Image (tube, rainbow, N blue to C red; front, side, top):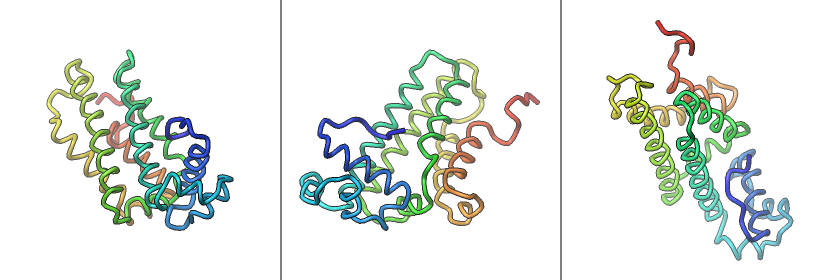
Length: 199
């Protein structure tokens, strides 16, 4: 699944798609501008027409991916389907978007010290949390979620799960970051009981 919109500029599209593929597989620390340009079939001159450096490219991609992801989640939220179906669709979206994530990329994203990139990632998490909380509050009104669960608790848990995803010890329990992300996502929505268990 392409994680961002189509661009009108074909060279920019090639750069974006190639860089994302390489970064996702190998992390952005290990991949050079030269490798991105060679794989994309564009010159370094073309690269520097669009980006100041590799960090600028990473910021651009994360901003695009963030905006596109939020749009997809909002589309799910706006669908005329049950709350359970929305949860299933949101988990499926998370599954597709993290399926081939490498440990290198996951560590690069969470260990880098770029203020602007951290702000982009933070803004995405806040926007995604607001969407999920919006779902829950609406679902509470309809009786699909426990009436006595506090929205503040849900926000706290979402923040805590995000921190847990960055934990090297926890990450080491799984074969890859994708498995951990899906475990945390399913745990938040379904807990530890079988989905059909009403007791």
